[in-house]
Length: 127
Image 1 (spheres, one colour):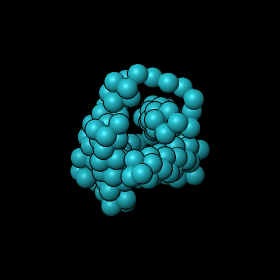
Image 2 (cartoon, one colour):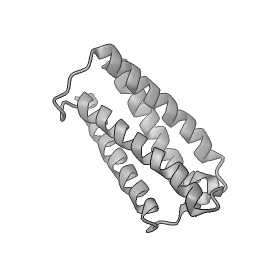
Image 3 (cartoon, one colour):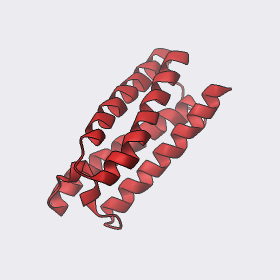
Image 4 (cartoon, rainbow, N blue to C red):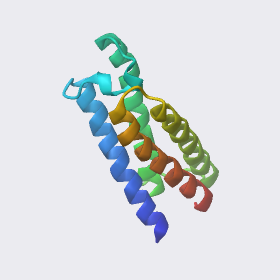
């Protein structure tokens, strides 16, 4: 029961993250609020945001598969490894967000990535 709840929270957060990356790429949201406020050009923004969007979509796919919303089956060890890797990456991202020069990134994205890290770790451990 709690696994379903955590899966849904992660799905919502990742969907919002994908939307956020798209809005940055479309320049609806200024890229200065990302990457610790260190980006200085559109070219840099695309260099960092396109891979971030693709990774977010991949992570969303992993959770959709884990939640049985996508009818794709992988061995349990593959899903556990993917979720563990996601937890580690979100944990590192939390550390990066905490050291950001941008107050918005520190206050908004640090808790989001921390929640994603713990959620993915829980799913990896509990299957």
